[in-house]
Length: 108
Image (cartoon, rainbow, N blue to C red; front, side, top):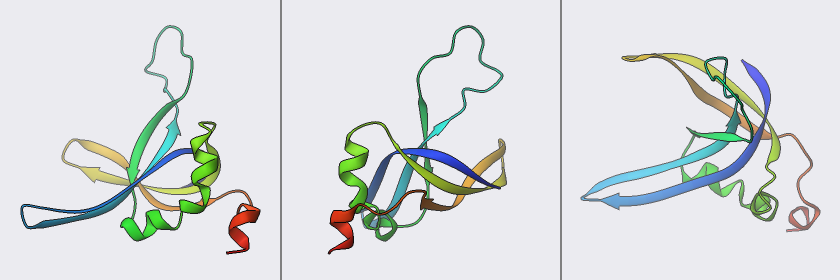
């Protein structure tokens, strides 16, 4: 399923711990508080979604200054519902900016 979302942070890591390699990127997207919430709901809640390796994270460095402002940026995402041992969860299958690349980055 494709939808529009707001991206608030990108976290990319490539490390070796006790001989094991870990290489991943997490995209922190705003999520709906859902109908299960009761009472007053205010603010933005984000959830990390793993997608790709540190190479994927490197593609988003051009948006570092924009994300540092804390307002997030518009993106188009694609999710797939995946069955797990504890139920069904959303897996991020694709993410692309839903805005022009910053002008300073186009020149590089």
